[in-house]
Amino acid sequence: MTPREVFERVIDGVTHGRWDELPALYAEDAVVIHPFAPAGEPLTGREALRRHFAAGAGLGVTMTARDVVVHETSDPEVVIGEFAYEGTVTATGRRFTVPNVFVLRVRDGLIIESRDYADHVAFAAATGRLGSLVADDRWL
Image 1 (cartoon, rainbow, N blue to C red):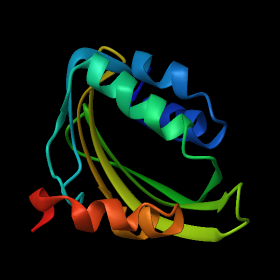
Image 2 (spheres, one colour):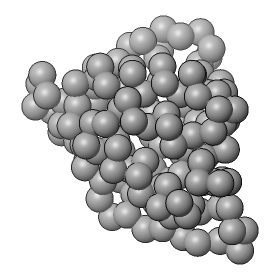
Image 3 (tube, helix red, strand yellow):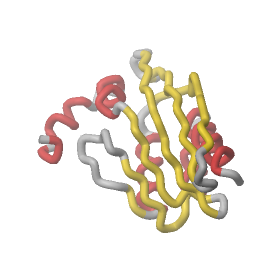
Image 4 (tube, rainbow, N blue to C red):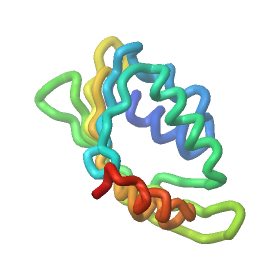
């Protein structure tokens, strides 16, 4: 798969709730960095990503991707995707929009590195988890 195709599969997997399929898009030693996440630690390795996506499955949200723009770069391994997740918290009906920019490095059809710039605070607020972010002393 090309980097663009891999990016599209990530977005498709998230928006269609195929959380258990997403780790297979990443290399065994992939590194995913969330620069805007309060804790800020990278996810390293497919197992960490498996746990991350399993947690996503338990959030009780439905999402679609809107305004998707994919930028090809001069580096054949790198693609940049801009989009917004629009979603609904299923338990409350609360709607939310979270803007995102993903910078993916894909080699041999697998993500080896990703920098996912998302508004984690807005997502936590929408899903009722803002208090847990504020209570986390790594955020201070």
